[in-house]
Length: 299
Image 1 (cartoon, helix red, strand yellow):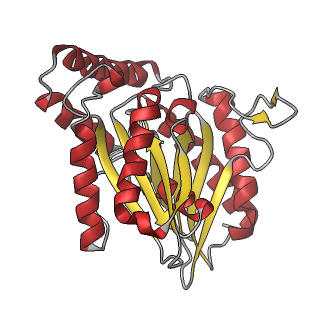
Image 2 (cartoon, rainbow, N blue to C red):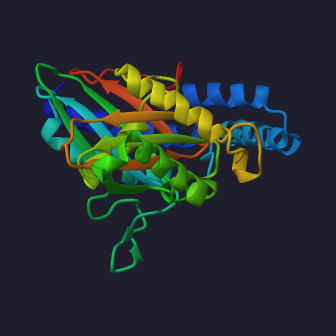
């Protein structure tokens, strides 16, 4: 397979996978929603969970997106330095999004800032957004596709705390955001928290935290404990599915962190809605692939 054929093959794979992600929740999200439904005791919350699963069944049966807001599409890429079409990835993703928008179909959500004009194909200035991580001595690429809907994006926030506020300040920040805007994001939510030096690094880490499988834990034991304590505390708020009360407000809490300046604590928070549409695919040098988030998926 020459380079041109590899580009064409990968574009087709990413088109089909992007479309698939819009219609099918990843396995970990489905598993968690089943768990929350089974332990729910509030009658209206139980009814809402049943509606969520009926929604999924109909999306699969009718082959349509499981939520009308298919978001602004983002790619988080862990690309091997020796991946054969590394330099063509931006064009591949752009062409894949355009094609998926037509064929799925996906709602048009890319509006050019200041011009206030919808591009009509989910592609625009720096959209789809691509975050790059180059992996040395590798010839494969692991790609996270994420549909950042308007509702789940609304609670996003980041700030820099005074060092004296400590990790208690991080907890307060998360609770303030959740209680102010969390209801707008279609709970139960997946919460991503980033802790770093500045607003931009903390915000990016909080979004990357949403790419992790639900239930995975931070490598640092203290951070892992903080994830569990935040999850427990946020669930005790009683926000419930769709914000109409219930036993669980979140599907989980993931923290991503970096080393930081001693004088600052940057903290960011991002949320994923109950229909957390993200998918991960690994593409090899020969363009064979493995879907990591949707077992048995056929595209």
